[in-house]
Amino acid sequence: MTVTAKKNPIITKQGVCDPHLHIFNDKAYLYASHDVPGPHVFDMHDWEVWSSDDLVVWEKESVIRPEETSMGASWECWAVDAAEKDGKYYVYLSNGGKETYVVESDNPGKGWRDPLGRPLLEETLTPTRSYDPTVFTDDDGSSYIIFGTPVWAGGDSYYIAKLNDDMISLAETPRKIELDDMADDKSFLHKYNGVYYLTWASYYATSDNVYGPYTTRGNINLSTDHGSFFEWNEQWFMAFTVDETIDHIRRATGIAYIHFRENGDMCADPLIREYGVGQYRAEWNCIEAEWFMKGHNTAKKENTFGNFDVVLKEGSWVEYPNIHDMPQNPILIIHAASEEDVELDIYEGETFLGTLKKNKGFLDGGEFPKYNNGMLELPLSAGTHSLRFVAKGDVKLNYFRLSDHT
Image 1 (cartoon, rainbow, N blue to C red):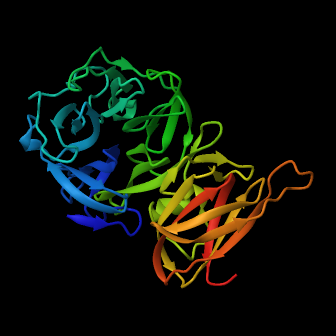
Image 2 (cartoon, rainbow, N blue to C red; image 1 turned 120 degrees about the horizontal axis):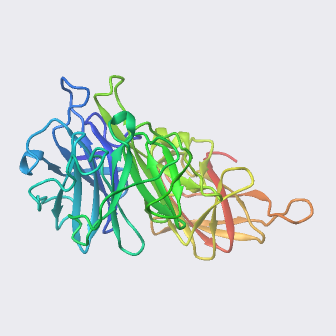
Image 3 (cartoon, rainbow, N blue to C red; image 1 turned 120 degrees about the vertical axis):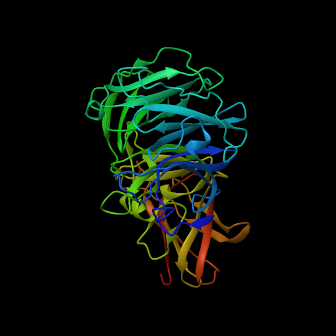
């Protein structure tokens, strides 16, 4: 089955939720729980694996059925995560609110087998409940499994343990993660700029040590349910659960861009929460530069206005695919700052569209670069197009827009 995301959620009316998304072999793989209508609040009889080359078009790779593992048939196939080690792939599966199983394959999307024939994390392993796993691999190649729930859900916080290189056994006794606030539901762990980010729903806490202690930092307001963070093509994303029905029986998956402020705080854009990633609309007032889908030698930097610039050097580029409803021969207007006159070559794919020139400019006193506009008419038909901006000099892109007039 193949589906194309029109906007968030990326896969509609199929109950694909609790998303943990990983990039394997330059391809996105979504490991998800699967809500279906039924007599219980959550009826979940299996897990699904989906893949995508662009986060817009999705293909179902496989269904992981509990009856094909030592877990046995269940309507409580709760949250998952996945990991890779030495060319082998692992998916960690919740048996309701009790225990965690693991399956493995030589393929990130299919061919799953149960290597243990029993749970990896037994129900009575720690004072918390041994489900809702996430697996984090650090810069040195060490992998850790994090699991557990807060007190309100029958646990006493998250626990963490290093995994052996086989990824299906523990290298140490799990230890409780020190956290200065009461966690809420399933955790995820990622790392940015040397800092560990422990997240649950849209809340996050940080630490300089994988074991903690973790200090709560904030809420990026994307979801009240499970999610995961990932980096691809020099951009950061969050995959998160959204509700499709008010009775919470059917949930789905959305994806948004994530930005890091200079102090390490994370933030996201309300518009992208609604419309998703990898596609834009030409009638938008502006398309923020930090919403790029692919980049080369780029950096996102917080600016004095509280939003972000994309910093480009000579030969750097950013790409914005699937800009819908462009007028014929649109005027491209780029709002940017540079200390010298600078040029941007504009492409659609490998087709050269023209060179946009932007003059340098300074605020009074000449201390800071001034933002101003460069404009270029693009020789394009009306419809959907992709744009790539290649820098010929140093420039800070703030936003761009498209118009059928100047």
